[in-house]
Amino acid sequence: MPYLRNLLPALGPWRRVWIIRALMVGILLGLGGCTALRLSYNNAETLALWWIDDYFDFDKTQTERVRADLADMARWHRRDELPLLAELLESAQALAQKQPDATQICAVYERGLLRMQALAEHALPAMAAVAPTLRPSQVKNLAAHYDKSNRKWREEWLTTDTDTLDKRTQKVRERLEDFYGSLNPGQWRQLQQRMAASGLDEAQLYRERVRRQQEALRTLDGLRGDSAVSAQTALGKLMKEYFQSSDPAYRAYRDRSVAQTCEAMAQVHASATPQQRSNLVRKLQAYAQDVQVLMAQSP
Image (cartoon, rainbow, N blue to C red; front, side):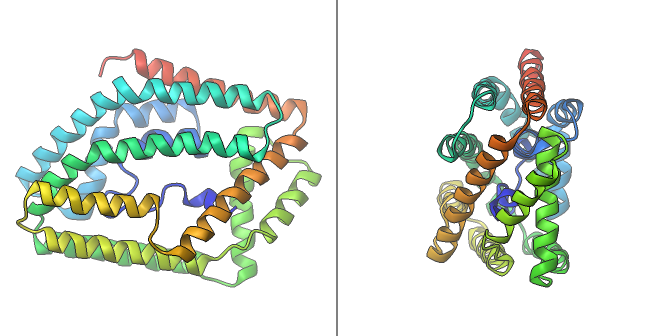
C-alpha cells in the first residue's frame, strides 16, 4: 500500500520528468480534472524547463539545448506514446466494468510502468548531452534542493507511526474517492485495516530516497567534461537503479507494497456500489477522451 505514493519517486536530477508530471500523474494518480491534464500536457515543455532550471540554474547555452530537447520529446511523445496510453486507458475501462483480481490490476500498473520506462529511455541522450556541461556550482544547487526537500519530507513523514499511518491512509482515501466517489463506512474500515497491515516503513523509503540522491550527485560530479557516450552509460545505470533498486531489502519491500496495493484495489472494487463503479468508468472515459483530444492536436 505505501507504494501508492511512490510510483513517481526521484530519478536523479530528472525526477518526475516533464511528461510524467504532466500526464502519468493524471492517469495513474488523478489530476483535479481533464482540463488540468490537457493544460499541463500542452504546456509541459515550458513547465519542465522552469522546473529543471530551478534545480540547476542553467546558462544560456544549456537552456537552449534543454529547450530544444524538450520540444523533440514532446513531438515524440504525442506521436508515439499517446496512442499507447490511449490503449492503456481502454484496458482500464474494460477492467473497471468487471471484477478484476489483484493480478489483473497489477498487470495494468506494469503496463503504465513500461510507458514510464520508455520515456526515461528516450530522454537519456538529451540528459547525457547536458550532464557533462554542469558546473560544480550547479551540482551544489541540486544538492541544496535535495536537502531542502528532504527536510520537508522528514518533517511530514518521519513522525510517530500512528500519525504517519493516519496521514497515509487519508491520502489513499482521497485518491480512491477521486475515482469512485465517497467511500462508505464499511469501505473506510476495510481501507484502514489494509493500511494497518501494510508494513508501512517510512524510514526505509527515506533511506532509499537519500541513497539515490547521493548516487545521482556522485555520478554528475564524475561526468564533468566527459563525453556524451560515457554520460549516457552512467545515467543509464542511474535509471536502471530506479526501476530495479540494487538494495535487496528495498526491492523486497517495493514488491510487497505493489502486491498489497493491487490486492487493496481489488478489494475496494469488489465492494464498490454500482454508482461507484459508474463513477470510475466515467472518470477513465474522461481521461481517454482527453488523450484523444491531445492526439488530434498539432504539436
